[in-house]
Image (cartoon, rainbow, N blue to C red; front, side, top):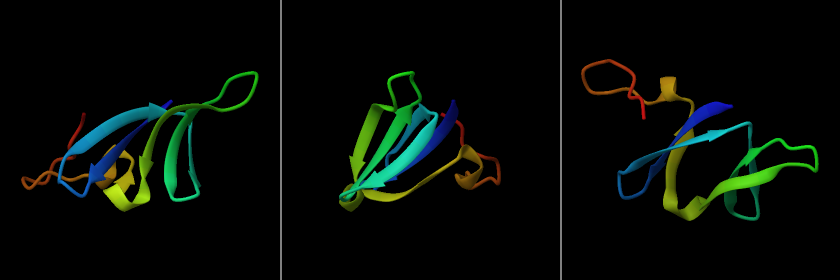
Amino acid sequence: MLQYGVKLKSGKVLWVAADLVEVREGVVLFCRREEAGPRVLAGFALAAIDHFGLPDAFVAPEGGAVRG
């Protein structure tokens, strides 16, 4: 699993561990791979998200990556 940061429009950053990310019908879904198929772990409406990505995409003002 990889760790993804999700920055909400409110400025809060949430961290999600997931195997894959899907975007469907205005929602970003963070999923885990299972034998029966992907299982959704978390979902966020695109309208509520400023951006999301791997930890290296989130940089602290001092220049270090922000880790959850």
